[in-house]
Length: 470
Image 1 (tube, rainbow, N blue to C red):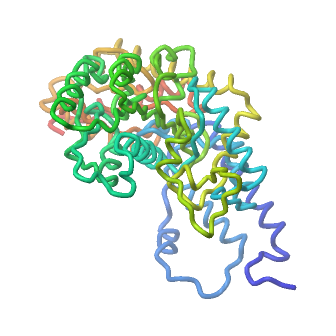
Image 2 (cartoon, helix red, strand yellow; image 1 turned 45 degrees about the horizontal axis):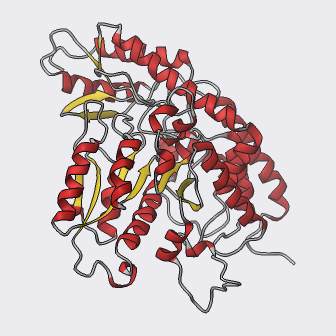
Image 3 (cartoon, rainbow, N blue to C red; image 1 turned 180 degrees about the vertical axis):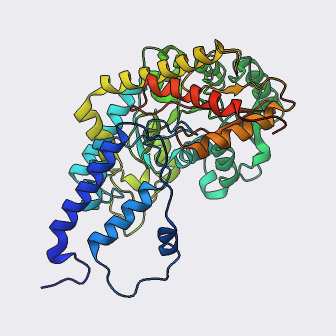
């Protein structure tokens, strides 16, 4: 019998060809490009074409797909230092191929895959040093943060999943440099953007626990119900790590849910260089970590871990005729926001299995050392300006200084775009206290010390050629 949507006799050839394309990409990721490839006019024309009505050759179509990917911005490249990238861990890509080929759904019990999912979560919790009772893998930090805040809302106001806030005045607390996903979660959950209090930050740009305590006590005295405190384990802007122990000292006696948004920085809790910054992590109620950031696996692979799985069940569990519950066992859909859930855990499980946890600690430590190296090189170079304090994690804001330049912000904004156009390095800008900085971020296991030095050299070379009056 012939099925209409199989590759038929071309299947093995297509798989071999795809494997060759992947192998070529992996080889190219071993070193940085000096010039980025740009899409050709013919490719751009093809990408505006109409819906195909007839079949196209699979090999040619794979080649076209590879050309699209090759002329896109790939975060896996060693000198992609913009935003917070992932780095396409090779064994993670293989895990995705396997998982998508079997197309398992973890909404209900999926036999062995469900056991693997739970084991991967347990391994991740052990790696981070958090006493998790459960959790789930999600599509990203935003969904993980929404999940945590939903559970916190239900614990603070039991029954709110059914009746809403029902007249309760509520508050969520986070650093004024917390990720916008916290605000988005408050908007979606009916808490409201206006009820998110931006806690002051200290000289290291960390949440000020004294201001937090003052505001929570004032709110409670005024009849406002605290929903949760969202601490940040590595802010997106500068990599600041909020003081978890001091924040837990505030939340614990008052019964306020403490969540850590560690989507970017939390893997550094396992490192020798920066583990001390996360003291108190074992005292929080929940955390978010994106394995597709600083644990290097391909997107999408975030996780929410909780101290008590029942907090998730009280928020998400329901009893429908089409969802079996045997012996009151929870299904995955009873503790998570999503129904259709691919086996995202496989890439994290296989990565730990193949490389071992120590290899990840070493890679994170190396990124931290690279960030510190860039800071030291820039601080010692009169052509650059650095922040007052060394980087807490792997984000290193720097500014190029052009003699006599009347507008350093415009200069660094233009320089950032020049660096992006040049192609040897890819950086993103950041606005810190109203000023524009270049913002390299090191989260790639392929990046080397040579790449760090080249980054500064490229910025200096291009920066010198800019200004007079821009």
